[in-house]
Length: 115
Image 1 (cartoon, rainbow, N blue to C red):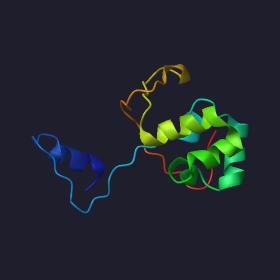
Image 2: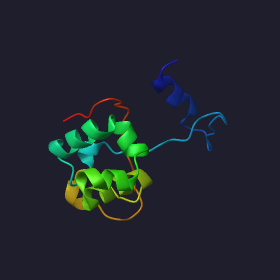
Image 3: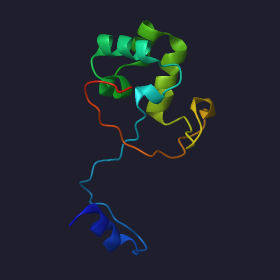
Image 4: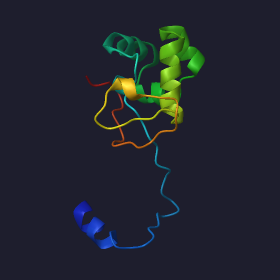
């Protein structure tokens, strides 16, 4: 059974249930989508901390700030905590401090960033 088939099976159910063993869904924003982070800044982060996943989820704000400065570090932490809003079809100018509205992707690139 493929994804399409599974969607057809569950699409009319009034309530869907996930298995209790299913891990929590983690929303992620790639570094390249975060305002204030260009390719040079991202390369600097990757050279210092190793992987994008570590930067997005594990490295402390203080450590990030020591490498790239306060404003860019704050943007990474806002993306990490879901305190940004993204609207489809806009650009980087539409980010705000409001709660994360919706995401259209889950990013799993483990070792490098993409351009």
